[in-house]
Length: 313
Image (cartoon, rainbow, N blue to C red):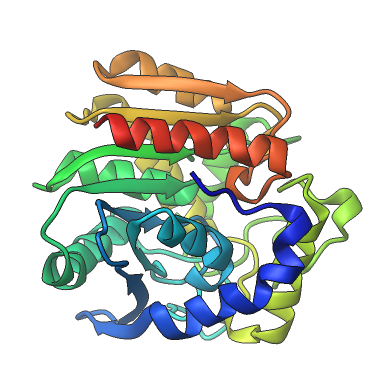
């Protein structure tokens, strides 16, 4: 397998951008609620398709390196910006506010994308790749919809939220009460418009070059920027998380857990994995939240496991 690496990222930038602008077909998909932005690319002799459900504040633009790498390795790739993310439709006048009415709305959109885009262009084997919030969306989709995915790789899945200094029961109660009082469109306590923090204090990755590329992209493309979450988003997410105890998925799952994660609560990943009959969980002790944007030794270990998992299906 080919692995993209930090040492050659700058050198390969021209090739990555050429792939993104020429091979990756990009368009808008209309839904009754708004338009979703998506992209896909199918190499000759493609063996499988990887359908990607990305995380919060993410866009397919952020996934240039990973999409290019998958394409180099003979995988067809499909990816969509979830509602409220990237270039897809947003709910509120302040587009920086991360908001959703019901968490299940994400998977309902994802189902439309699969029906109208993936099914139209790919009839072979397909596997699902989720990251963070996108993993929760993927799990919701797999548990509620009839589908043809043969397996799913879930990176740092948001099966619960890491609430840091705030006790979780208080965070849940505050989100619920604020939503009941009509404040669901307000930023949750401590949340703001998009704010790029310095690499030295970031919680997402220990790869400086990948982090700086992400921030440079969002500086150059302001329409991709997204700030913190609203009380409505937080309440909808906690309600969805509470429903996970009753959800089952009937295909093989690989849960990749970031050992140094301070965005999602890893304990929930272990609890859910134990309830599944075909779930494997592996922890990457030195990894921060964004496993696919980590430094090479972590990222390649994760991707090696991903390729092995997908090829064995």
